[in-house]
Amino acid sequence: MQHRFQIAISAGLLAALWAGVADVFQLVTWIGFLGCSTFFAQTETGFKGMLMAMTTNLSGVFWGWLIIAGSTFFGSSMMSYALTGIVTSIMCLQASHKRLAFIPGAFIGCCITFAMNANIAAIVPPLAMGAVLGYSMSLLTEQLIAFTENKQSVRSQVTSVSDNAAKEL
Image 1: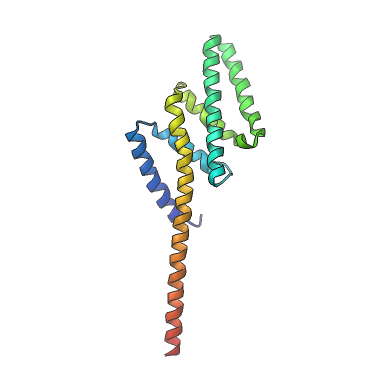
Image 2: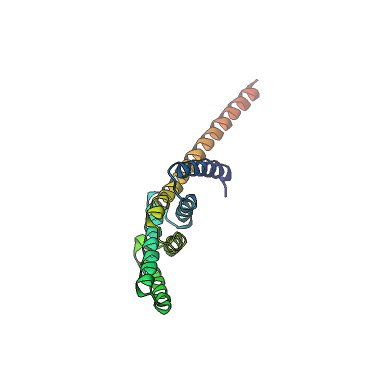
């Protein structure tokens, strides 16, 4: 990791900002961090990466809700187990769709849904905002890298000019 310092500054600042926003709006902070982690774990970058994180996570929320709702509807442990197996297979198969290709994102959304007992209203906003957080971290990191490289370039030009001036004297 060549740019650890810039990554650390970006992640630290925006994580603190997210924690404050989540607190003010009574959002579940850790769900946002899982959405952010999904952004960085999948292979797409930029806006496409943000959309990939959101779509895979939110598909998992749907699948988790379906398992919980179906298990409640059938009221049978055996049906619950079967439904879990069927839906798990579907979460893997959906990856043949380009926009849903990050299977762990679906599992993250599904696990969040289980942890939050299918409270969709408490899940969706911080999860989507988490993907935006990840995208924002990558944008800020790029800006910090550009700033520090530009600063180093100016510094080396000044050093070069002063070295040349010293040689001429």
